[in-house]
Length: 213
Length: 213
DNA sequence: TTTAAATCGGAACTACCGTTCCGGATAATT
DNA sequence: AATTATCCGGAACGGTAGTTCCGATTTAAA
Image 1 (spheres, rainbow over the protein chains, first blue to last red):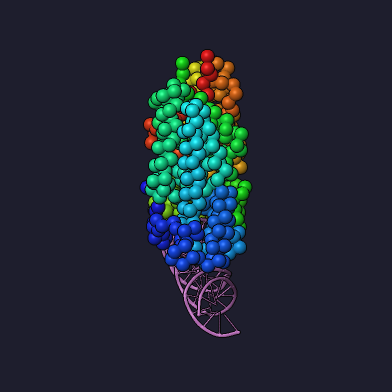
Image 2 (cartoon, chains in turn brown, orange, red, yellow):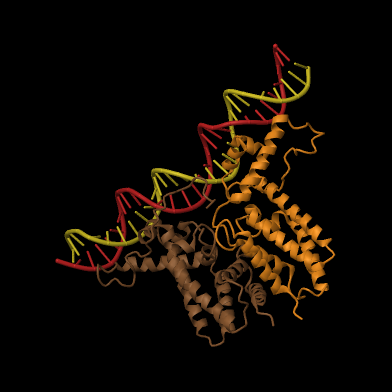
């Protein structure tokens, strides 16, 4: 790890994400009305703020934005991690859905391109997702391993299809491609690059993995 | 900036980097012997630790490693920023030197390749440099603007020479190239990617900016 | 060797952030 | 309307990191 010097804080390694759950509360006492309302307000505030400023924002900023006390926030999400895990998880499943659509594109190359562009777009627009994908103390691989595995599998399908179609070199790995695209998002100062620059970078990457005639 | 929520801390915006200076102390009282020794020990410790763990390491870790009290460290560098600015500055000037060598390579394409590889290698090996180059709260452009400008100019020369030689497409900017390479370093978890993976990514980038026949 | 200025070291101060706690408020039930 | 389980809010706690301060120490000059 190389990265801890001494800390430990109090992270209880809560792998749980689900509070009483806002959907399936038909059994085991339905959530009180105001509680459900607050739960939603917190999720929305977190979604917006994490997207803008990344997962490093102090938790009380989220509470403030949600119009809710800190105590309330902690009632709904026992830990800061639990909160942004919830957010990041929705981003990841969104990406899986995108990948699925792209897999169903009959044109293999087009499918891969579309996915990578959307992936880049998302990562540059949602700072939390970007943070999660490779830095800032989270570590997606460990915490969301199963969802990440699914996503990787989808992307590998996209890549393999393009290789089979003869449009992409066979000697580049899925990890390489994702690293390059993720890296591009990171580039150039805080708040990321603007989308047009980003798409230009993706173009270069696509050209770099293209199979030469 | 999008990134501050409220802080301010106490950063006095010290743009200075030079303490009494360990070299040119012939006039204005030469530094006391032990002081000069400590100054050097601090720089060396910082160099090593920042390279390994990035600029986020607590300052007292550096002091400990230097075998020096915190007070002493602050006597020599009035601020944590001042300390890692000194380190990052040496990295940047090192890169400029590398770029100069590459410019003097008669083979334009080879010059560009060599520089990008070395750039990637450095950024992945010196975590502080990587941190400085685009994230983690520093912002090279502002703080080291002149040195960065020089570096960018050199890289642009390298790029332009390759374009003139017909080996690189004319429609990719210097910023694009650097963003891609820097991004590659960032990729894949803490402590960066291993060097072989990194060089593979650089290869893809090089292929992506190559001029097609 | 004496003396004074320069330097050292680390306890202590300040600020930030995650988390806990509990008296007061609120919603659902009777 | 009264009752109570649930929920709200934010003051307070514990821990980390950067920085300051000052008595003790050391260097170098007299």
